[in-house]
Length: 357
Image (cartoon, rainbow, N blue to C red; front, top):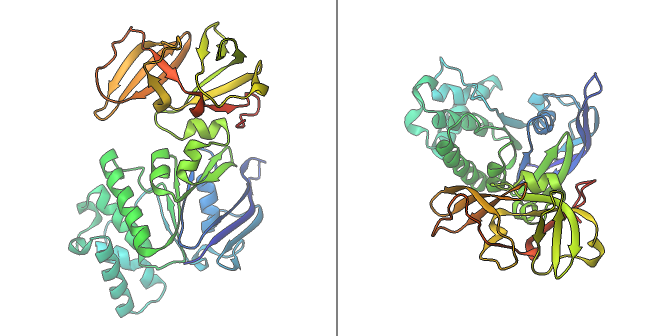
């Protein structure tokens, strides 16, 4: 396995569109790093540049100790798993697994040994004689992973490999990929638009938006201290509540909202220097606490019990909110629900730049 280093790697198309703007980060040897962001953010373009399927407009890309900017994909010693399984329908599972090795001229004994090893790792032993049309979606994805695994590459690249699966299969395949990574100690770069996949799989996450890296950190560090408003609202389900208003201090802190309503802010965590300033204030749904006495009682609109927790959709003046509450007696739509907003868990952002204050 090997590390991957990107130093100001750029992709600019002939029409001037910047697909990736100066990406700089390192993927450690044996790390599983996730590239995440909305459609069009540049994550797949970045992965394809690492693979050699897209040319690099500027910067330096290293795999191990070798600069590979102009190295052909087949000579980079990487293996890629695509969103589509891309299996040969007329070949058996064993033949699909072996195909790439045969193309590279490996002898029969080596091919058979690597196919057996990959099949055992991915529990495909009983399926080796089947054709792809006889497999489930999850089994096909395991074959696609196995085809990369037999190569024994320096780096695995996975481009939204689970997006064609249903929710239950995605969950089980996430576990399989995480287990496979721990078992192999492999260097993996994983692309997804699904923030749940990113949070549960990545040892570190690179968050991208419009071709630019917004933040790189561990999943919980991103969740607890997002660098800007984009990261704050992109990661987390349900998304962070964000309200814009002017911070006032009259018998305690409050946020004066644009519709004339006020949002009391209890506890510590606010700064005197922010008084009178317009701010974007965010709070996670789990930090809206039930049973406050600070005069904050938004109206319940929709209640969504999901078993171990309850999502309550609320409205405070003209502003929607969502709270994540423990199960118990459910509030009724149309009722006022007293809540407490703990300032210790607030996220405060500059409304002009979006940066965390």
